[in-house]
Length: 414
Picture 1: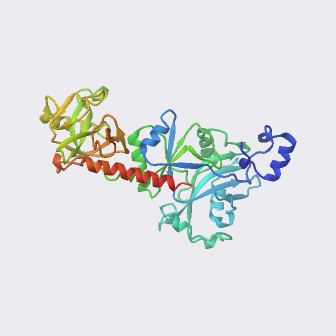
Picture 2: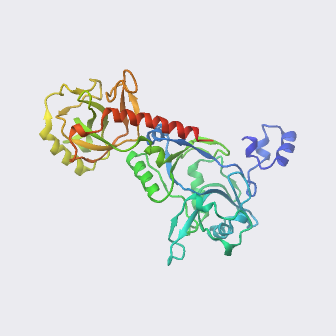
């Protein structure tokens, strides 16, 4: 426990003098009515960074709402207090939230501290406020800052609780997110258009994570917050246990790529009898060569795999063409080679320097190429010829643009 987590200096100093620093946590307790600085998330610039960080632990994803952080306290007296991320008392700014929280708290809950996001919305006519459209933070910033009367509220909000720090005498900041979520869901009754739990999904599947990110943007949020399930709440800390995954960070890679299919590996398990993965290449228009850039095995439906297996049979060749640039290393040499005929549209998490793939060798690194990380199939480009595929120079430009985007994102973090 650090001193910034303690309730007030008036309590800390006497306790420190009387009991010493070791015993300080036993005598200075976090409780409703005394806010703590919120836990913050680190920015990440790719889906792959999330998967690497949480490779050995369970994680969950929540919508990242574009609003104002609100720490909501229910005192044993029944009073509701609302604090900003800087511990300012915002209670008079949000009389509507006070009313909504009192209505949502379940019987038997005597005290409560919630970490939330207050988000500006436009309520749709004829829905009694249940249906709404999320508005950007700039709209929320137009609200008066203090002494707002309920009847004068011009910018309505929805409160999205996503964490529970205290419940009926039980301090939760040192418990796992799993336990804090259980407490959260047991403390409130949701009210559509008023108080709604943050939309969340728990999965380790790359495709589901990408789809959830796309869904979050469609719902007018900024992207996702990805959280480790087994870690505690870390007040006033920007922690690697919470990662921000914004759509614009992921799109720093640029547009999708159109790549040429050079080979395939025989399928295993559910894919026995067809192909389980494919070797793709960019086109070096100066040397008129196809340079490998990734192995791909995701994004395909069962129907896609059947259709692609059938269409590729007409292009099977005995050995790679002399104008294929590839390395004969484990995992890179396919079971079957194809004539360079089919072009696929592919999206990836990001790009990396590769010791095994040959796209753009010498353009970014003198001896290594560039590879796509976590690529996924989007569709077949019947309208594109192989020499119209994404060039290796374009791949290198995407890599360089990605690096600049990552540096800008890193420099922008406080």
